[in-house]
Length: 395
Image 1 (cartoon, rainbow, N blue to C red):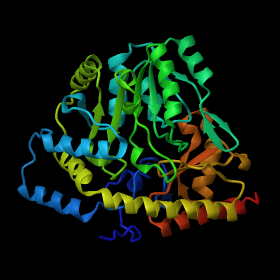
Image 2 (tube, rainbow, N blue to C red):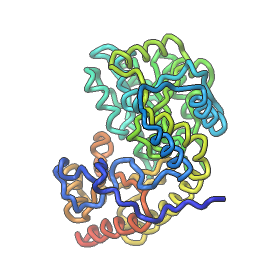
Image 3 (cartoon, rainbow, N blue to C red):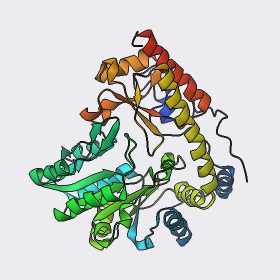
Image 4 (cartoon, rainbow, N blue to C red):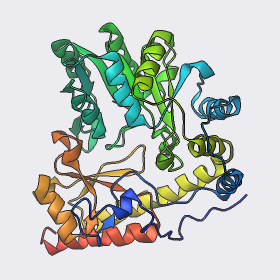
């Protein structure tokens, strides 16, 4: 078995990396250690990059279609790991999940309609609603005793009182790290079906479920649920291919499928990224062992994070993540919120993190840390964070 190296640092500055090279345009110091956007610091397996290099050597990059081998690779991955697949004609290719969310908002709602989300949640969820002239309705997650859950009565009440047409589901959930159980998802679907609410399930983090948990796709909850849903998948997080802009959206209901595809076409999208299509296919075909070793490595990072905070800054409460590679930390004991917390993190800890208020008011006082980086780098960042806490005299 080949051993993959996740410890050796890879210089990303100077590559036009959003994560590393956008500090100046974001009005931040270039000296900050970035652990913000969900972008990993690991190279693809050599088997994939070698095959991509062969394709580059061909030298022609014209319009490209998704062939049978492409969808065979997608479906082999989905069926072997998550127990579902879809006919080729059910898929709609998009340049990303956020594009798909916005497309669904425009395809299935009208200006002024209500769209439901569960904050704190990935901030583009509210953005694609507001930016398209729809109304955000929040059925916030319940945070209690260090864990998040769903208030199903409040969820249904929000639908009824606001005449919600569409629900954007984050499954697994970013940033709180919940991996929703089959029972929780069935309860959500029963409510949505009862009130004719279309569900858009963002499942981009499905491959980063931690040991002891399992991902349940909305596609496996029965025909009625599946035919009332748009299921969003991508290798963008799994293999860090966001820059190649390729996502696969499964829509089993032909009426919904055709409406979604037409809206994407009206937005000007018709053909995929040549290298994105090939990279997706290759990663699904060749990347299984790389991903398995990466997840083992990330478990070591989770262990480092938990132990370091417990030993050096116990007032910072790490929420136990069931999935993703994004740590959600309760910092409210510091008494810092909003811009004050952001200034502390940047000016005193020297870090660039995502502060919780960007995920909605329910996230204020929290921080999100991307742990998908080399362990030594993560350790240095954590040391800076806890030293800053100690320097404030909180401990």
